[in-house]
Length: 245
Image (cartoon, one colour):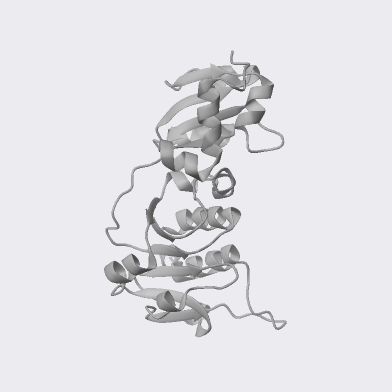
């Protein structure tokens, strides 16, 4: 059992709670039994699992290193106030190129909970590639909890505004705009959907690429919804034909 917070393995793992540490080591932390079991199920390369004594037996058959730690050490690894007694170290998934199909472009979205919620809905609606421009880290603890395993199923492509315009400016691009078409009267085929920053929306450069703009009609003089809520409405509506009989 590891009881020292200064243990080298604990110090290395605790750095993964920070984006810089994740980037430097090429690893990330997964906290909680369900998320870790889902990571195994989706083929994520889990290298090591730190466990409290009461859950150690649950991970004995997964073929990776299982290390028992004291409750005090678990608090160092955990990102939650009340932890479940298990944190895993896993390799960040390999990046793959975009090969077509519906995709998202997330433009400077900063709230990790919004990122996670959008990712979860993207999984459900078939947006398998997600471009990221200056967003919160999709593999941060808060994003992972909000994403509910979505990060294990999608391909994430970090890019810049310039690179995206150069490589994908000719694609069918859709973004939301208050003056756009009613989303409930709009339909389209394969596309890239742009979702913008919580306060500033989509940048002017990216918005200028849009072949179509769509709006969500609202009552009571509301002008906007939370970006994750808007994303869910738009993604499901754009893909509604998949579920029609």
